[in-house]
Amino acid sequence: MKLLYHAQIYTLDTSKPVASVIAIDHGEIVAVGGDELLSEFDRAEKQNIGGRVILPGLTDAHLHLQHYALSLEKIDCETDTREECLRRVTERVQKAKPGEWILGHGWNQNVWGGWPSAADLDQIAPNHPVYLTAKSLHAAWTNSAAMKLANITSSTPDPKDGQIQRDAKGEPTGILFENAMQLVGDIVPAPTIEELAHAIQKAQSILWKMGLTGVHDFDRRDCFMALQKLHADGKLKLRVTKNIPVELLDQAFELGLRTGFGDNWLRIGSVKVFMDGALGPRTAAMFQPYLNEPENRGTLNMDGEQLFELGRHAADVGLGMTVHAIGDRANHEVLNAYEQLRAYEKKKGLPALRHRIEHVQVLHLDDVARLAKLDVISSMQPIHATSDMLMADKYWGERSRLAYAWRTQLDAGAHLAFGSDAPVESPNPFWGIHAAVTRRRADGSPNPDGWHPEQRLTIREAIEGYTTGAAYAAYAENRAGKLAEGYLADLIVLERDPFTCDPEEMKDLQLSATMIDGDWVWQS
Ligand SMILES: [Zn+2]
Image (cartoon, rainbow, N blue to C red; front, side):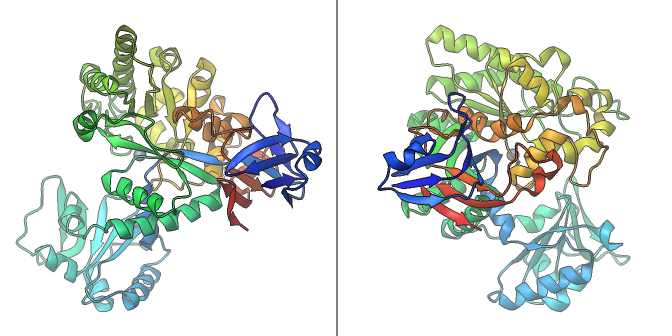
């Protein structure tokens, strides 16, 4: 038994919001209180926290664990110069096995003052295929060895919606755009489950340092297999809610798989569906056209009726829905489907499942209160607001007033769950909390009040998005998200008090330790 004392504990439990001592046994919290616990549990191993702050462990409610883990293995190509990037590639090539693929991500030709070429890479990697994706993910830089394996020659035609960059003589330069990237991307060998498990294990220790003790994962089968392997080996030390792709709904139905199946480490979440595209490529489905593109309203993958049919099938076997919706039209269709689904659940005497919308990026005014009314979880990523604000203003104009509108959602009574969509953004939850509270980027832009400052949250509300909110979204509110008797002993120790520090300092908040299941998994 462990007793943590002399701590400033914010429990997020409204019946006992602050405490100074917490008793832990067998991975569970057995008591939360004051110094009286010191004598009550006098035989426990006592640890002085030195007056520092303890919060419940944080959960990222939308992340791609496999992609994040693999992104960490890639060469970081986000360098100021092409030379520095080439130096990093050289370093990797020297350590690589013969013929092994060299992968990287993050370069930007605008920063480098021009496009790089296959010839640059051929000098340092004549025998290893190299595939480096641009930060934008709309281009890739590859070498001759990779192009040879992909059979790309001067006579290869450009694929649909893609382009092979060519020199004056018509020879491929090594730069591939959009769908042409797949010519090489598709032949990069997939990691084995073993390799993936190893990568995820490394990633989880990085997540601990950021204060995360749980994630809701949106990757697929290989990720699930790797997680099960880690779990079987006793190496999974992260609470994972595993969502499943809609393409496998029939198989899940046949199997009789339900939301909530699993244990405290790994559980089945909901069925993931994509309703539309994204803001950047202007494929998010909108009621009205994008600014300066009178013909473009984005693309809707299906209508509310079709989504309802999927949702009904899932509900029949006890699986909830979690639907990606960015544009106001997409969100509207999802809400229509959920309205029907609620009626269906009622009629059939089925439980009211915790259906979710992922992103909720922009809503039509008529729809803002419907998530709360239908008891739908608003799963949002605060860092998207500050990353996307210029694009949102440019493409959506006035409509941005109801974009990334967490204050509006909270005031309407919706359940908020916060995440990062990593590796799209960093999974650092304190960067997310900073964005939710200030609506400003780390550099302070766009102004001291923030972008649409009426949407700012309090620090408490933002932290709740990563704790009680994320727990509710995972049906875990009786075991996670708070520090209370009977809850899982997942907690973090902070160097400074987030409730009294300047909101601008949230992004730099330092952790001193992370505990999962009663064990310190990381300490500074
Ligand atoms: Zn995602």
